[in-house]
Image (cartoon, rainbow, N blue to C red):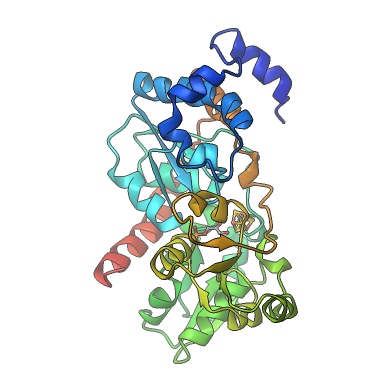
Length: 350
Ligand code: 13P
Ligand code: SF4
């Protein structure tokens, strides 16, 4: 557990991190990407950290991969590449850097390490987990194989390296239906997200999709009734849900897609009002690019994603702590599952 005031004090001994309206003004080009959602006073606090991190990245030959759920100061301020789980996994194979700082959750950093074992992968806070990744172990995968002999196991990337290693292929929310449809067997096991699996089962009725009973603590909170009431009280609002939501919630929505799929949909469609049925930072990160869209309604915060902060990113890069390691034998097997997903996605033009 980090003691944030103590961390700030330690970092301030080495870096000039005092809030600075002058520096904030100098860095107004970066601020312009988040000015609708970050106040000038907050930007004056963030700007010295953003400057220090961006300078240290050059020194360390590091890149920051930022997930779409990062807060705006991380998403716009220090990330070199942003995207959904699939895009970040692919980026990890492409970037020429000695160090990857994963601004996201632990399974994403593990995926980067699996794909780029020669690189140093830093996780700013090792406690940034995921309820889905925690819901299943490799033994759980074996149990599903015993229950459904011969059926392939398609595991969501939101899993540990051990679970990936025990699976046949991975998927993300942007390619799950196509990956399941491409399996030869009639029965396909999906782990660990029961709701993603049920949503895929609807999209791929020719397959008998069976699932593990895991769920995302952020998306499972939404109900179809919430959406119906919201629509009734806010006519004309476009409802857009992540496929980790229960299937009756997805059925009530106007569109469902991965985090990047949601961003693309809102960017292309530019609805007057949009409710993003997903993590809170999604709307914040695209608000400035889409001034014509009013983002309305409640969102849910992912407590794991929100563990990543500018202070922790600076500390990780400064001290090179938080290095993610994966047992090489596990990594070799897990890489097969992730690489099969990347290859199949490319083949399918996804
Ligand atoms: P995406 O692959 O859609 O970015 O989803 C990752 C995630 O953890 C959503 O909760
Ligand atoms: Fe895991 Fe849900 Fe958080 Fe995504 S939003 S990292 S699935 S707990």
